[in-house]
Length: 510
Image 1 (tube, one colour):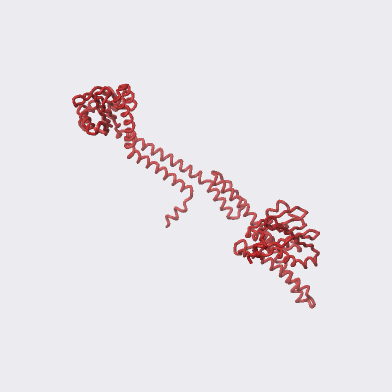
Image 2: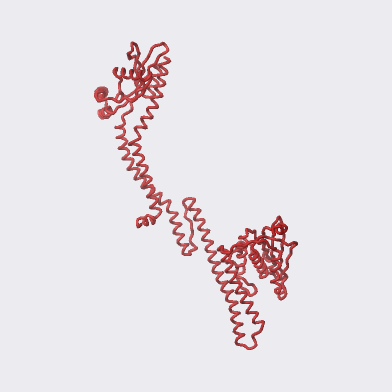
């Protein structure tokens, strides 16, 4: 368990270094295995394919007696072959001509005894055969003498190499018994030595040792460089993220290297900006809520003390003020609880079909006293009753918040207009005021739960900046469209759209 934890805590740079070195080691192992076990078989197969192709061409030329020796010379030279042509008369082959393009050091001469043996083997095989012939010790001794004689003037070191190769010499042998066009029967032997590989393998082995050392060194250098280059931008991003976790919003995610890191840094820079804005809005929320909580509490406490200490102050007006401030305080707390539940998903929409028009009228009844006492002009424009399938309580909350927001920000004419229209089976509700309006640069933020366009608290404007966020959460839960149009000095219009339900269809279901 301890070793696992150590491996888990290794930095990325060291892990990448290890992976690169392991990969380099695997390549070296593959090269050594290939050189040790597969080089000779692959060479033999490749050589056999070439010899087979050349032997077939020569056999066709001999059989059709067409440019025989021109073809033999060309093909034997191209594929490094030895060609022996025998006339067959009286049942025994007689050498007519031979042609060889093999090096004397690796060539295996076909003696007459071997030719007779090959002939009998070919007859038994039906006139055509091929096989691998290995020289024996006596043939090897003879060949050493021939090599020494042939290379008496050559370099002694080269002679020793060729002499050592003879012991392992093998030849591919192709034999044919052919009947030519003139009726003569011909025995064709084609041989090609499989170059002794022991010496070659020894040379390759020595080269592989040197190449392996160089490769290990280069792999180590490359692995260190590559691991650092790959891990560096990630390490920089990680260090910057640690600073962000400590609420250092001045940190900049600017590490570059490859696309994924750059995309991650762009995302973290965006997250940094959002977190900074959120923290700022949270501080404003605390200030706003503290003010909105303290104001009604102060009023309740003050009027309560007056009623307690001063005879005759226990009047209905003072009691009403206490009730109003307690209601205001309760509304603020309820807004906070509702928003928390909506955004956490704890409140699920309980949809049913109801008359949206009646809900709007019920909302307007709440403002009758406001219209009577403060002179507000609140109107509702609708041509027909509209039914929708939604959570009646939550939609009523949306309507109340939008109307209340319009009342709080109404202009000097104290006019609030609510309109209901139906188009393409969707009902659209708009709430319009003639107040100060909202600057265009602030429109994207008005739905944020901590945002208040008007940062100054005035006694006549009640709210903590939660109403529109509650509206947004409820409408999102109903998959409704919503938005706002506003112009500074002319007022604002908040709207939402939701699917309407046919009255006839609703009655039929009932």
